[in-house]
Image (cartoon, rainbow, N blue to C red; front, top):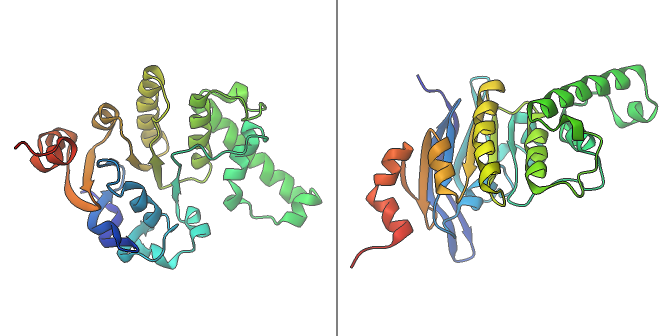
Length: 260
C-alpha cells in the first residue's frame, strides 16, 4: 500500500491581485518519482517555493511525513527544512564556484555537523573524525555519480552537465527522504538528458528517496515519472500515470489550446 510522504491540501498563493496557486491539492507517495507539469506561468515554481517554505504566507496546508508523524511545514523555519529530509535544487545551478567540488559537497552536509565552529577551528579530535566521516560519504556519492576524479577541481569552469551532477550530489549529502528537482534537464544535450534519466532512477533505488520534479522536456517527464500532476494558472487539472496524462483532454487543452 502506498504511503503518503508529501501532502498539499487546498494550497493557494497570491501576489497582490495575482493568484499564482489556486486551491491546489495533491499527494506524493513514498518511493515515487512525480512530475509537476504545466504551461509557462502555471505556478509550478511557486508550488515548489511553498513546499520548501521560501514562501510562508500561503493558504492551506502542506504536510511532510517523517517517522510516521505528519509535520506541518509552515511550522518549520526555511533553514531547517533540509534537516527534515526535504531538499531541493534550483533552475539555475546554485554552487560555490571558487570552492572545490568536494568542498561544495561538505557545505551541503552542514546540517550534519555535530561539533561547533570552535571545535573545527581548533581541529579537535572529534571535529577531525567528523570531517573524515563526511569526506568518506562524499567520496562514495562522487563515485556513484562518476565524478570522483574531479573532486579536487574548482566548480568554476566545469561543464554544465557536471555542475548539475554536483548539485544533485550535494543534495544526497543530507540523506534526503525527498529531493525536489527544478528543471534538472534544462541546458543538457540529448546524451546528458538520457544519462540523467538513468541517474535519477538509480538515485531512487540506491538512496531510497522520493523525487518531485518540474521539467519542460515532456519526453523526459513521460519516461521517468511514475505519476504526473498537471496544473494550469495554479489550478489542479489532473494527476495520473504518464500514459493517461497524455490522453487527458484538459491537459491537452492547457498545452495546445481549444479547437474552435
